[in-house]
Image 1 (cartoon, rainbow over the protein chains, first blue to last red):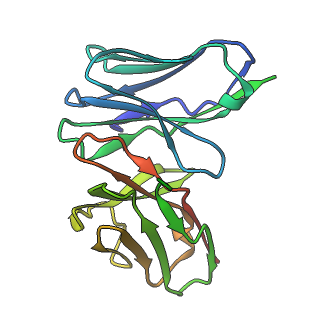
Image 2 (tube, rainbow over the protein chains, first blue to last red; image 1 turned 90 degrees about the horizontal axis):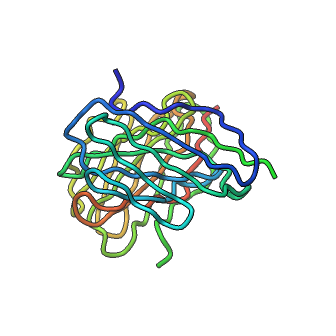
Image 3 (cartoon, each protein chain N blue to C red; image 1 turned 90 degrees about the vertical axis):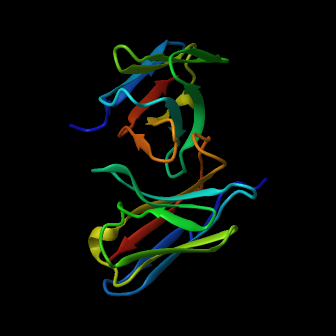
Length: 111
Length: 113
C-alpha cells in the first residue's frame, strides 16, 4: 500500500465551479500537509501548507486536514481557467525531512 | 530571490553517455533535495542533503547515479552511464529547517535515446 493515495483524475469542471481534491494516507504520524500546483512543463509550486489538523484558507483556496480519517482536501472556489494544472498533495513526519507525494490530480477548468 | 535554478532545462543524450544535472538552491536554505518525476511513478525522492552533507540516498536507483553538494550554493546529479529508462524530469528543491516549505526548480527534462 502506498503511503499517500490520490485520485489521478483527470477532472474537468466549468469555470466558476467548486473543485474538491482529496488525498488519503496510511501513516498516522504525518504532521505536515501540503498542496502543490504544477503547471505543464513547470516545477511544483507550493500552494497551501498546514501543520496537524484543521482548516486553512487563502483566497479561493481552502485546505482541510482530518487526521482521524487520514484524509486531506483542497477546495477551490470560483474556479478559473488559470487553475488548470496538476495538484499534488504531500505530507511528512514531524522531523519534516522526508516528504511523501501523491501522484497528482489533473484539473481542467473549462471557460 | 531568483528561486531554485536548474540547468540545463532540456538534455538529450545517447545511451551510455554521462549526464550531469546542476542545481543552485535558494540562498540560506539548508536542505536540498533531488527528485525524479515520471508519468508512471510520479515524484520520487532520490537523495537529500542537509548543510551540504548527504543524509538519505536510499532513493538513488543504482550505482550509476551519484550526487554531490560541494558547497551551500551548488549541487550536481550525475548519471553514468545513462540508459533510456532514466528518461524523466529531474527536479531539485530546497528548504530551510525541518518541516520547512519546499521550493522546486523548473526541472531538467532528460531524454536518453
